[in-house]
Amino acid sequence: MAATATAAAAHTLLHLAAPSKPSAGPPLPPTTLRLPGRRLARLTASCSSGSGNNSAADFPNPNGILVAPPSAAAAASSHIDVDVATEADLRENGFRSTRRTKLVCTVGPATCGADELEALAVGGMNVARVNMCHGDREWHRGVIRAVRRLNEEKGFAVAVMMDTEGSEIHMGDLGGAAAAKAEDGEIWTFSVRSFEAPPPERTIHVNYEGFAEDVRVGDELLVDGGMARFEVVEKLGPDVKCRCTDPGLLLPRANLTFWRDGSIVRERNAMLPTISSKDWLDIDFGISEGVDFIAVSFVKSAEVINHLKSYIAARSRGSDIAVIAKIESIDSLKNLEEIIRASDGAMVARGDMGAQIPLEQVPSVQQKIVKLCRQLNKPVIVASQLLESMIEYPTPTRAEVADVSEAVRQRADALMLSGESAMGRYPEKALSVLRSVSLRIEKWWREEKRHEELELKDVSSSFSDKISEEICISAAKMANKLEVDAVFVYTNTGHMASLLSRCRPDCPIFAFTTSTSVRRRLNLQWGLIPFRLSFSDDMESNLNRTFSLLKARGMIQSGDLVIALSDMLQSIQVMNVP
Ligand SMILES: Nc1ncnc2c1ncn2[C@@H]1O[C@H](COP(=O)(O)OP(=O)(O)OP(=O)(O)O)[C@@H](O)[C@H]1O
Ligand SMILES: CC(=O)C(=O)O
Ligand SMILES: [K+]
Ligand SMILES: [Mg+2]
Image (cartoon, protein in one colour):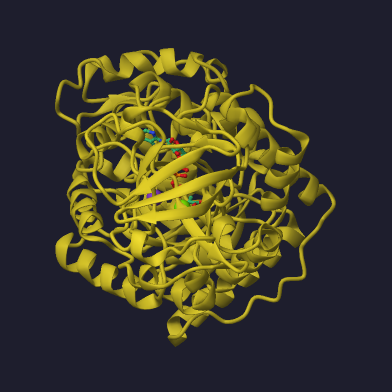
């Protein structure tokens, strides 16, 4: 095999040495890539020049190697698409120390500029989230396109997630104000009337028509699950007068719940649709902008997920958008398993969840959802308030670091920043805290050789899928016992890569796929390093080509021990890189 590998390497290198564009530039020494920092940004900034407005134009990556655009399938045989942030991580830290936990950043006013987005990508953002609760479609379009441009021009593979607004009860947008402060004893008016901006003083619009009818004098009104509390003192037609009993900050479009005798009141509001008419328009927008994930807020049942999935299948003609169920309401907890089975992944949306169940139940619910998702082979994101204090301060609290550590220790696929990256003062610092805490806990876990005693139940329904599942379980065991450097998986749909990720092996998983969109979606899953590469069903030649391409970029070395799997052949091989 060594002989063929050398021949293949020579063949491929010939291609690399003769790029079709003179602009490829001289190769840069690998040591010029450093994470974190702005250096990479400046280095790659020149890459965009000359690509004009042709988004599919070839461009040299920082290593001087020509990288194929997604559409250049014919020319792709000697190309491999690698995320520049991951490549730098691999070069700097080696296989064993790459980060396994994925990072999602909510993009907002603090991070929507091209430079800020690039800084997040350099800092390890795997998925950019836009929240349709805030901003208008034009704003979101700008962000989605900026992320795409970053990927095309600078070699990142950041996926885009659109999060629906949902139709739970919430306040209006405060007429443009960033926040309002409610003080103890003040009387505020919550009204279903619409107001010209700015609304009268101490007046809040409520989006739910039935609000004034459903509440009763004496009810307790909670803003964002307890950021501020009010007691209903008087009802006057569409207006409800409330006295502030727990002072706090009111943020635009904050969630509202009302409580009676210690229980949350869910009368007609329980009948609100999960996907409102505005959400459907947003979903159409997301489909046309080609987002990778749609996260559905306030999911109540599996039915709504199935409905959305068939809508997407009919609308998006082949391009696959993954549907993530946000677990944040009492109903979603009641129907948890069927919802997760129907979805392509789940989010533990602790913000609203904490407003619907007692706070002390949130940690155990989180653990339960993370475990269930792992069993059902669905990626899971732990979200909200991970580093809340970093909205204002440059360092996290000890408790926040402990919370992040716990989510990493539970081996959630991904962690998410909300306000910290959307409107906080230190988005890059917050991301770097997630990154360093993830790396540290993952390392500690490996050093302690803690392979948790999670007995993985069968997930596959077809016999062929069962074979893939068993291969992945065996490969992960072998990888741990033989202490291999990486598992390579050649996968068309990404399924075998996710089955491997589910086993949470000690080494990273290099997932090779022919599809740009599959590659972006795999970016949400634990331990996967997705590459785009065209390959055949001849594993010998796939491996030789991959080895020489990765070696040429300094990402692997002769002698590295690798296990290789393929979902076409359902094969498993163990070998040293020649
Ligand atoms: N596109 C945006 N424009 C303006 N502000 C935004 C935007 N996205 C997020 N924010 C701000 O960041 C805060 C946190 O974002 P986050 O996405 O967690 O929203 P949220 O209102 O808590 O809703 P959700 O329950 O869907 O997470 C928001 O309350 C809002 O103030
Ligand atoms: C993320 C989200 O929607 C929540 O925590 O409520
Ligand atoms: K939302
Ligand atoms: Mg929410």
